[in-house]
Amino acid sequence: MRDNQKGNELQRSLKNRHIQMIALGGAIGTGLFYGSGTTIKLVGPGISLSYIIGGIAIFFIMRALGEMSVDEPVSGSFSHYAYRYWGEFAGFFSGWNYWFCYVVVSMAELSVVGVYINYWLPSVPTWLSALAFLVLITLVNLINVKAFGEFEFWFSLIKVVAIVAMILFGLFIIFFGLGNNGQPIGLSNLWAHGGYLPNGLWGLLLSLVIVMFSFGGVELIGITAGEADNPKESIPKAINQVVWRILLFYVGALLVLTIIYPWNLVGTTGSPFVEIFSKIGIPAAAGILNVVVLTAALSTYNSGLYSNGRMLHSLALQGSAPKMFARLSKAGAPVNGVLFSSALTLIAVVLNFLVPGKVFLYLMSVATIAAIFNWAMILMTHLKFRRAKQEIGTEKDLAFKLPLYPISNYVTLVFLAMVVVLMAYIPDMAYSLYIGPIWILILYVGYKLRGPLK
Image (cartoon, rainbow, N blue to C red; front, side):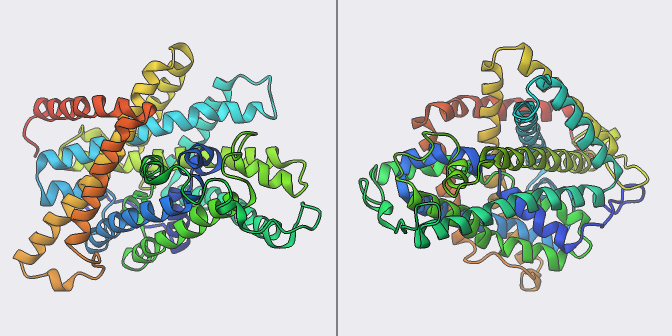
């Protein structure tokens, strides 16, 4: 069961620059631009430490996925590996869990696109904006993988430029007093308002829950392996740079932010990024940020539609999904998988306007716990992958090994379990603890109804 079966061949058209930017875009979402204020309220200036801790866990998860992706570069990624090295249900669960997670995330991102457009065009109905962008992104994903790669490259570049600009302007404010009458702000805000960890260790632990969810999407690198033109070179490079991206874009940006503003004032007057751009005298700060968050939402939807089409294609090859999803267009795009995922997103956007938000909150709770399931499955599948390699004597031939195996697997799994427990103490996340087991049961029933896989 490989992607190069006759008639089912995906096109290896993603260049190294595409992979690098897709990896970057996966780690940068609207959570950084708008959601960082909420996290800072929990932990204070120590948010930079929160992202370092979370970043280490993500690095080990990505290296485990990377080891398997380089050894066997297929677009089904961890669903394929779980199926092959763990068993039929593991492959079924991994694939459908990931697919549904990204469908829900895509619904959320698409449903806010209209709000961003209303900033400039308040008379345009939000559903119309959402529909227009849904059609556009769907068409992009139906053309070929190179079209997706180009769109994602430029989407990610806009986000990267915005963050780098914020960091540079922030440094000028801190050390040269730009926008502050030439008076350098200095570093005192890191400890002057209750200390570096004003809410203590408990605040740091609670912040890890939100921090980890902001990393959702980095595993997209593994999905691209099946269409990378040189996966053995581009995948290791992209994954190794994940930790540096986290340090620069999350830790760097939030460190600058908490130095410029007292942590207890951040987010009280809007987005932290708007505050920084306004501070240096850019009157169009809110408009600039609106472009960035609109781009971030479209980037997430673009990536979600791409990965969902590929995941359904892989599940169909396993026998875990209808055969219709294995069909590729002449350009090598999984057309039925893309259209099906897009159609479901459209239904959800309509329901989001017609039905009170409670149902949508429950769906998002499934998505949050599904992200934890994704990462845990990657780590456990890697353990079985490595044991299989040991049994046939090819472990020494692996080109991109996970550091500190197997200790890093077990420590990271314990860390993820701790995050799940901590979710019980955050009201918006507590739903996940009830819905998670129900979601597992639903997938198990679906697997049983499907019957033995072929």
